[in-house]
Image (cartoon, rainbow, N blue to C red):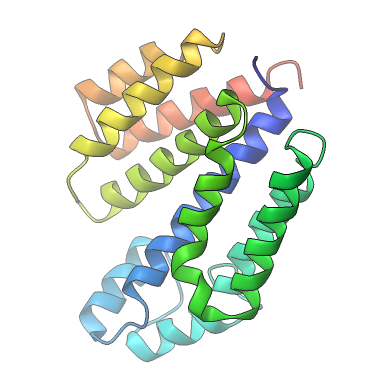
Length: 200
């Protein structure tokens, strides 16, 4: 069963937001000024040292903050009320709510949400995994990290989605694999966005 494009996109972005938050949590608080400046530069953030970047992460008014990222995730979940099972919908809202209120939960919430979504229909988990892969690739390209494992996971996800009827991604992924660079990543991302917007 393939999802409506709008629902698939919401699940995809849920995967991206939670993966982004999980990674930020893994390196927060910033203590090294050079590392903080590298992170801020890679994501075009208005921070110049560890202290100012830590402040951004805790500023509820800034889009990069933990609070903002969880709000984006919560908005995506709200739009999926008719797609997810009642139990999964309630559990995801509780997980996000707990993490928003208590920083101690932040490091675990992405993994817990993944467990909930893995129990849903296959398409739900695949689009969530697609979001995870794209967020990881985006970060790895920005920081010149190793892409091999993420590209392999993305290949498996795309193959599974093709089996569910989402066509056209394999060719774009082949181009990304041939030349794994930012330009090809954005080309793949644009192609993905076109599929989400088709018949919207």
